[in-house]
Structure formats: structure tokens, C-alpha cells
Image 1 (cartoon, rainbow, N blue to C red):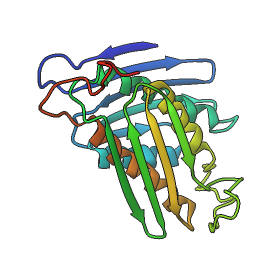
Image 2 (image 1 turned 90 degrees about the horizontal axis):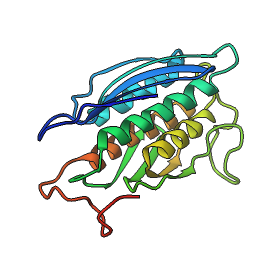
Image 3 (image 1 turned 180 degrees about the vertical axis):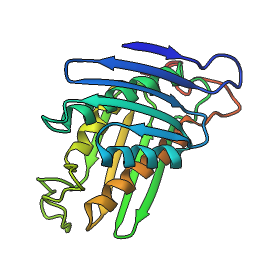
Length: 218
């Protein structure tokens, strides 16, 4: 794993480059938190590319991702490992988190779907995934999503992606799918809401302090 943060100097863009190679995947990416929404994504998983593009554009992140994985097995390793490396890049780019807003939330509707994402750049990884997408929808949920696939993408992998990202990034993330009928709309609303919430949480304020009563995050 390489860690190449380039967020030096006052006013310099906060960004980091990460490269992770295993027997299952090879993932290299650069994440600029202070970008304009420019994305260049190629993971070999088309729907994941679409979701990362949506997150980057709406979060105003500059994001370049290249991933090669064992897609002949399935998409799982690639999706999860992209999440891991994105989490590493977020944490490296954020540094000590001095001056960030820290807490943020966003709601995004997409036709039938409505998603809410709430984030705390706490330094403590925790994911709450209240999303009835995939093979095991929530009991009694009024959704028609069970068993849906989006192209070749298994919606159950969305949770694996976000769990990997928040674990490495040190984020507390609550994801609630408030309503949906279509799996594509549901997942896209989630990724867009995450982009907006992460953008606002990382936004710098005028105080320049570490946003914690402890003086440190984590």
C-alpha cells in the first residue's frame, strides 16, 4: 500500500493517492476533497463506475480510480477493495481533520426512491445500513427490491462497499433508504446523498480547530 498525501500548504487542495495490490485486486486511485467534480473511473464493474461518478460529481470531488480484479469469480472483491482504498485515501487526505465541519447529512430523491445519509468524521468506524436492497429486505418493508439486480451488479454489494469505506476512513455513517421501488434508483440516491454529506462534512470553517472536545478525533 502506498500513501501519498499531497495536501501541504495553506489553501492547498486536500488529496491523497493510494495503491493496493493483493492476489484478488489491484486498485489505484486519487481522491481530491477540494475538487470540482471531475471523475475518471474504471473498475471493471460498470454500475460501480456509475455510482462513483455520481458521488464525485455531486460531492464536487475530483476522483480517479483504476481497478483490476478477479471479476471471473464475481464482483465482490473488486467492489469491497475499491471501498477500502477509497477509505484510506479519505483518511490520508483529511489529515488531522483540523478545521472541518465534521457532521453533515443529506437527503436525495430519485423518482420513487428517497435516501438519507448522515455522517460524522469521528475517527471511529461505524456503519448503520438501514436499506432493504438485495436478497434479504427488511421484514415488513413496503419495497419491491428483493432479488433485483442492476445490470450485473448485486445490490447487496452496496453494503460491503460502504462498510469497507467507513472502516478505513474512520467514519460513522448512517444510511437510511426511506422508500424505493427500483433498485437502481435506490442505490443511486444513496451514493449521491453520500457525496453531498461527505462534501459538507469535509468543508473547512474559519476556526481551524480539530472539531472535538478531546482535541483529537478517534
